Image (cartoon, rainbow, N blue to C red; front, side, top):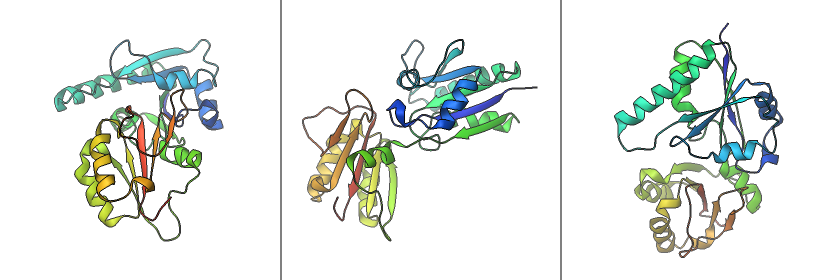
Length: 232
């Protein structure tokens, strides 16, 4: 019998925010698959799991998902990653792939999951706390109230999408915002929204920052903004 593939959301960064179900699945799996951008790269997700889960005797399998701009290269890399996982499943091994945040929100796992599911393998997805919901709790603000609406964006699509969203939405979450902060700060300043925005950077990690946008601060990839037009 072939093994089962689990996609496991491990939350925004604090090991204590992992769910009991996530811990249960990781401790019962034969193999822990760890997405990385390049061979030999350290995994932030794995460093979060290790203090909370007993991984003794488990195979840790890095799975490369390139971030190159080439569409054909990314597609080939995803198929190779899926092939690695299916090889283990064919041996009857249960494989759990870990991802930061929630399994359904901009998850690397889904790049291989769809291909594997279409091949008929057994799969199960374990939800986790997303960066924006965990960050909102830490910032002690709500995401939506009453009849308000909310849109979740990736800044990798360009700031034009943010300008459009600000015209039609009450609250906007911008994920993967680190490389676009200069342009985003400009939009926030032009629209008078600086004091209605919270920046969530590296939530649950040693260099965590929760606060207003700051022009002279350096922001990494794991940066999320919550913009509330009606006020925080």
